[in-house]
Structures are given as structure tokens and as C-alpha cells.
Image (cartoon, rainbow, N blue to C red):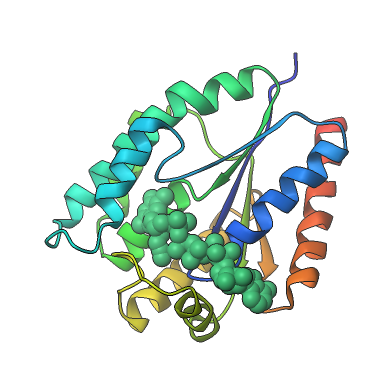
Length: 211
Ligand code: Z5A
């Protein structure tokens, strides 16, 4: 049986990943593929409990290394109990954020050493990497305006403009370095245009597997 594909949805605040991900899943199912959708941090009962700690704005500030380790603890559970079994069955896995978010947020945002993140990535993931990364890119200004409209803000959403600017720069830098995996979606556009661009990329991914 052919292994499924791991497609991750990445980007800063308010880029529309969470809005677009179910549309991507529906489109791929229409093409006859088995698909599951999931998210990080989270995706399992244990991962969701860790997410609760990571996003809780009422807890005292957390050491950046603690934040990093919790992200990878949740990820380990997710990979072992959900992602790898699904991929092995030929199911496509659409994941709202994955390790590129760790490089962007904990690396570029919090200033943690990229090499340390890479060590954890190898330890927890072995050779597993996303087959494709969709980066929903937009200006920090637009993204923050959209996120604010949603009301109550979590621990990350309360960060400064500069924090999110570093994250955007980080993602774009990684998109250049890993241009084989990354596809940039212009998330500044109206919703339906964002969906159209995303679907063009999904068609490319399907075609690649068929080759
Ligand atoms: N995090 C981390 O630090 N390290 C890691 O390793 C991982 C995560 C995995 C939780 O992520 C936090 O964890 C995240 C990074 C950190 N914190 N932040 N910030 P999350 O995925 O649960 O939450 P999020 O990243 O904050 O998602 P988001 O703000 O919800 O963004 P989004 O998914 O890209 O946007 P959305 O919810 O689809 O849309 C936001 C609003 O904009 C909504 O009202 C939409 O209707 C609207 N929208 C969307 N697209 C458009 C367009 N095109 N036009 C107009 N309005 C739009």
C-alpha cells in the first residue's frame, strides 16, 4: 500500500490555516483519498491536555525551554499514536501546524537555538518530515487585525508585533531553504482566492504521487 502524505499548514496569526484546512480535506476526499485532519499542539487526548497548559494565559510565564519541550512532548504522542499509523495505512494527514512552527515561534520568535530544535526534531521524529508545507503568508498587521476580531487571546496571541514579525521572517527564510517542501499561499487575498491557490497546490501534490 502506498504511504499517505503529510501536509502541514503553517503561518503567523490569522492567516486562515484553520479556515482552509477543512476545505482542503473535503477537496482531497472528493478526489477519492482517505484523509484525516489534526492539529498541533494537540491531536491526541494527551496532546490536547498539553495544549491546554501551553496556551493558558492565566498561568505564570513559562521558561522558553519548557515551552519547547512541551511542544515536542505533545508531538511525540501525536506522531506515535496518530500520524505514523495513518500514513502507514495510506491516509493523507493534514496537520494545522507542525515542527516548522517550532522553528518559527520558539526559534525565531523566542530566540532559542535552532540546533537544539533540530536535535529534538531528529530524536522525536526520526526521518519523518512533512511531504508538503503550505505557508499561509500575510502581513503581521492584517493577521493581528483578523485574530483580534475573534475575541479572547491565548498566551501566544498576547505577544508583541515584533514577535510576530520575527516569526514571519523565520517562516519565509525556511521557505527559501526548504523550497522543495514549501508552497507559499498569499493569505492577504480574499478567502475564496486563498482557497483557489491552495487547491492548485493540492492538485500538484496529487499529481506528484500519481507519477
Ligand atoms: N505553536 C508554537 O509556538 N510552536 C509549535 O511548535 C506549535 C504551535 C505547533 C496555537 O496554534 C499556538 O501554538 C500558535 C503557535 C503556537 N499561536 N499563535 N499565534 P493554533 O494553530 O491553534 O492557533 P493560531 O495559529 O493562533 O491560529 P489562528 O490565529 O487561528 O490562525 P489561522 O488558523 O491562520 O486563522 P483562522 O482561524 O483560519 O482565521 C482567523 C480569522 O480570520 C477568522 O475570523 C477567519 O474567518 C478570518 N479569515 C481567515 N482568512 C481570511 C481571509 N482570507 N480574509 C478575511 N478574513 C479571513
